[in-house]
Length: 72
Image (cartoon, rainbow, N blue to C red):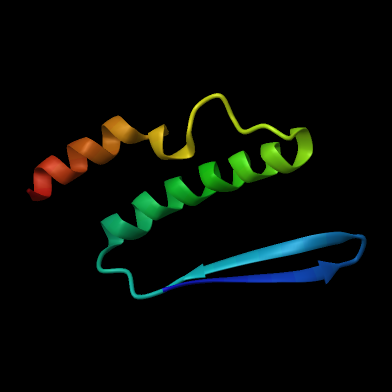
C-alpha cells in the first residue's frame, strides 16, 4: 500500500510517501532506489515543464533485471 500526504511546512510544501506491506528486505531496497528517481522526475517536470531525459523506471533497470533473474 502506498499513501501520500501533502502538507504546508513553513514556506514550502512537504510531500510524505509511506509504503507498507513489503514482502522482503530486497523489496524495500529496490523501492528505496525507485521512489527517489520518480520524485526527481516529478520535481524536474514541475520546475521546467519537462521530465528527465531518462524515464524513472529505466534507472537501475539492469540491477532490477538481475535481481528478478535470481528469484525467477
